[in-house]
Image 1: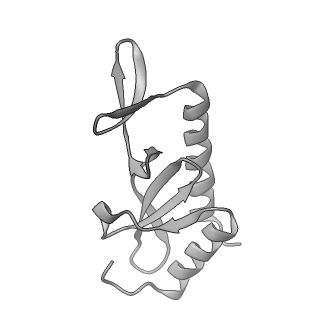
Image 2 (image 1 turned 120 degrees about the horizontal axis):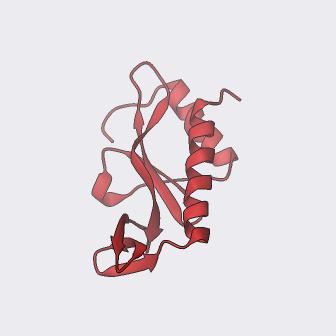
Length: 110
């Protein structure tokens, strides 16, 4: 990231940390701030005037890398390069929970 964060954007990142999110760098996405919790991650982008928004879609991580969700052989999978994990109901629920917690944390003011 090349631009300075505002005080309100720094406050959002602190709030995320207080709620159990790790603030991380994903080298392939150097223009964004990473948020990670468990085996899920998302990219965050500063909003002009303050705050942060989710860039793209949160996803399941394999080896710390973003996956894409694909259908293959009648099943859904989280895939990164040649690695894949089945998108089981447990993994899908974990991702939904991550998305909800992240979205709520970005909107919250406390």
